[in-house]
Length: 135
Image (cartoon, rainbow, N blue to C red):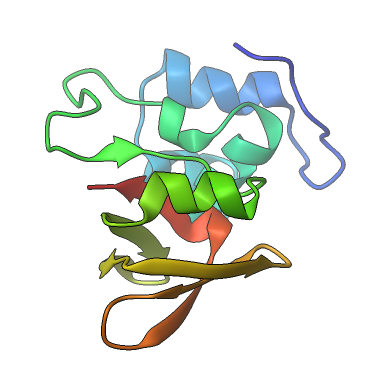
């Protein structure tokens, strides 16, 4: 496990959430229920804030790359890093009710954690922290 981050925002520790997800090997929905977080997305955000990027936490039998999807953590990345990672690929974006696949033709800017991109047909904006994987 990497060095624990701040716990100011959550009433539980990095060790507690890591034990539930990584030791008990439960789903994000179960983690959310156990800590009264409301949604699996909230559980992933808490895990990422306290432990490490949630994309690095994979349950047994769900190996990264088996579905030709590569988990990414771009929340703190700069324009060059984000562009190199996603241009010419399809990103998986976490939405309130599931995920959305978005083709990326060009990244135009990164401002305040929001990635402004072009999908080949129209301009779009996506929160960097919502980009969970690339295909």
